Image (cartoon, rainbow, N blue to C red; front, side, top):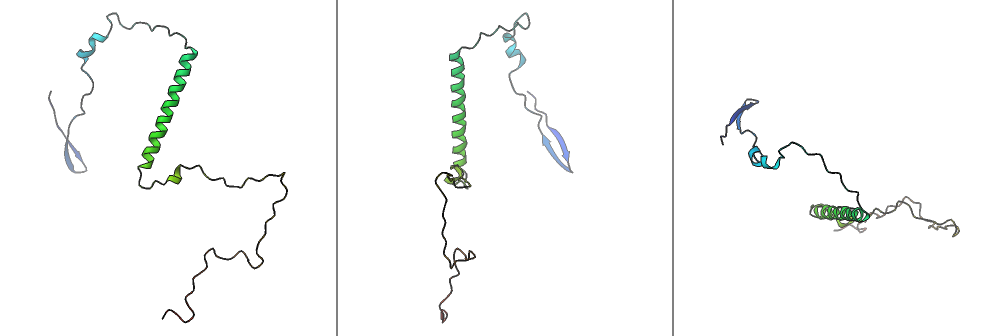
Amino acid sequence: RKSTAVLCVHFGMASYTLPPAVTGPKAQDTQFLRSKDGFEPAQPTKPMSDKDIEFLNRMGGDIDSRRKAQYINDLKQHPYFKPSMLEPPKPRFKEVSLTEGPIVKTHDKSKTGLETKRPYQWGPLGGWY
């Protein structure tokens, strides 16, 4: 088998490339598979039974579960993965019932609602030194 290199020039730079590799078997290796009289008509397929349909559905479910497991395992290998990523999202609103009566909320009179969650930690009155 001959290998011929081709000189390619891109943007002023020369590089040598090989032609694409030939893949697959040679034609003479597969000639015995062909029938002598050309293509034969396809045989009619028999109808699928309930057992066949159930088998195909089960196999489809197995493939889906395997794909899901492989995806999750690949996801766990990522450095930024956190287990909370796999948990379903929290509901945006709290579910309430209209039959249990009114919801009564209380709040402190001295709070205005403008307070910070973590107030500033002031130093001692005389200073640190």
